[in-house]
Image (cartoon, rainbow, N blue to C red; front, side, top):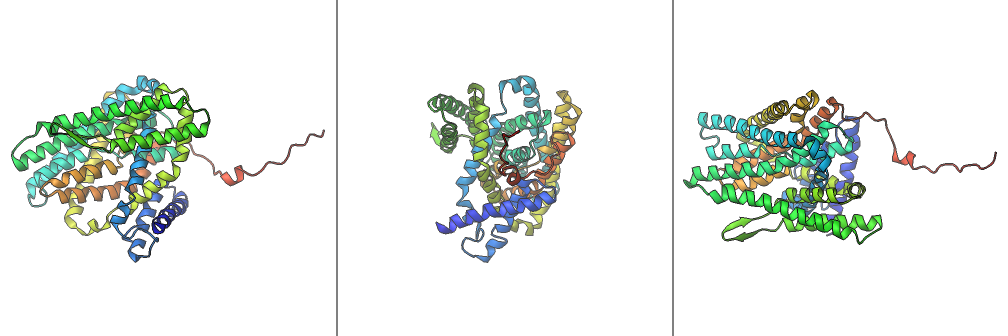
Length: 430
């Protein structure tokens, strides 16, 4: 137990120290946390096998998975706060069209590239794996994007649309992945499962939205019984964790697998709560302050679990490079064309696609499901490689796009230490 506590504390300290270096290089803090995780991970300092000094194995990193799951719940809860009715009336139609089309276009582009690779070199990648990778490509990581927005206090139409699109992207990705897995299994086994392709993914979305709505209503009701700010913040934190715990449950009804999406459930919790609670904005700000150390740990752990061994496999590198190139083109041109179609401003049209590049947790979860394919290992390794690249480069690209759109204000250096210095007493003498 003492080793685990020391390990977590060093992870937080390492992430903070690395963020000072990142600031000198004008890089987002998210990148610093990921690099700190890599350094403390099993392929760098962790390889020394000094108890408490870094993460010795990938299995040890996985023991902290509960931290990552809870952090993702709070990230989703915060994103749900963006779905205010006033915001949806203003750009809800644009967000839905862009969110769906950019995901579909990305899947089509990646599918075409990888299917052509399969036809040219059948031994490199199978057709089912090529199809599944196309669906996985649609997923966008909300965590890195949200952290960049928070760090630089980005604000404007691009930022607002980005938050909505990232949230919609998760639901679209679930459907695309389920359909692609159904097609892939049909190719390998010669049978099509309508339940797996249509019923289960749609049921997962409905159950997630339903659970999130119920928990949002309950949170608003319970908040009434508490008046102090600290207690109301505590009950909000408790409800997010409770919702996350329930959303991890799985069960079967009549042979149909039923489950929840943690991201969708907690997003819906935040959406319902922010639209019916009059003091939701103040509470959200307080919850955000509480989750800062948690988010830091989430990204350090994400960096530590990046598997550097995949860099030694030339086939993974080949498919990975093609996958990243095709996915980047799909995201950019999918967002560009859909923004043009919905008559978004030029700044949004030119910059939105780049902000959708980051990819992490959702894609990794999909790749675990894809492991059931005959060459599912290649899918897992390609996604790991893309996550390694996107997580290190994506936050900086997001920052650059928000700067280009004029939604990040250039701020001077400030110090909490100097700001909190005691002020000299005010003289009452004339």
